[in-house]
Length: 165
Ligand SMILES: Cc1cc2nc3c(=O)[nH]c(=O)nc-3n(C[C@H](O)[C@H](O)[C@H](O)COP(=O)(O)O)c2cc1C
Image (cartoon, rainbow, N blue to C red; front, side, top):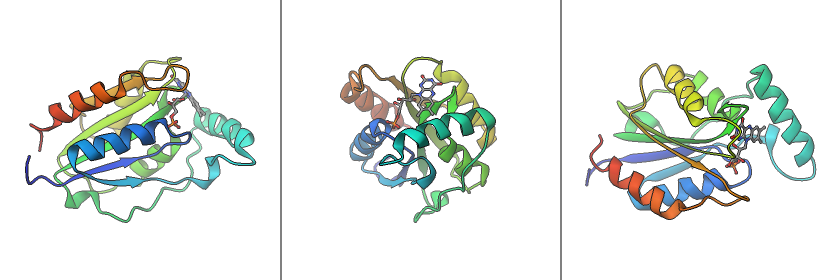
């Protein structure tokens, strides 16, 4: 683990998954890549884009896949992070996985969600799109916009990942 190269790839619309991703990257001394997706960005049209995110997610309308600066295949372990949208991973992450990027053998996943749905469905879809099981998963349910016990949960997850790759 000491010499393992780790990459955290994530999408976040309103910042919660970003906070978790940044903390995990710090704990694991990992490189980090945020996927941007202009179609659902916050801002003046944020409310409209929120509706569009829900609509597209129900319909399975994928946006263009993000292009990353780093190649996941150059790493020993990749962590994929996303919010849940309509029970499944957010569309930007789904679009990225749909583009079939080269991935290392070891993949972990984390997500944030508000509690209307169970995380298993989202993890299962990620595994299906990757074509292999994801052995290490972390899901944190938000409460009033915050991620309760994020520090302890992130630290525990990072420790679990120390024996991977
Ligand atoms: C379009 C849309 C659909 C969502 N659908 C769900 C859902 O089905 N289940 C759930 O628990 N949370 C759902 N959420 C809530 C997000 O998963 C939650 O707020 C998450 O923490 C947001 O992460 P972010 O701040 O990184 O964007 C949805 C949010 C959006 C924008």
